[in-house]
Length: 129
Image (cartoon, rainbow, N blue to C red; front, side, top):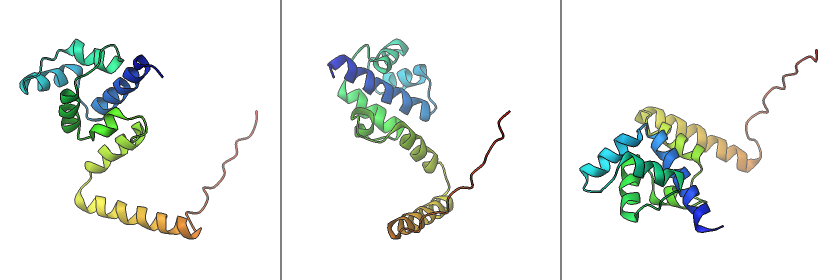
């Protein structure tokens, strides 16, 4: 894959992270300007579209702002978009909710290793018309 394809992939991850964090292009540009970077709504849009490359220092700032790792924003084999969304939703849970979800997940993993797993979902059939 050429550099253009890589820029588009990074841009797609930047866009997904911004959307998961519920920020607009203008809000991101304003945040970057407040931190001393030269950024406009159009520049952020170009990074996300893969039209322009983004400076690594800006990527680091975006990662911090979006509560993501730099790896998740840059590397194709990092967390998927769905995993990033799940992580953001998990972070919004209360401590008790997080502990409960962890316990359920660990029980599931333990059962999966022993072959027990969760019971199969019931099959639903629809009549053909």
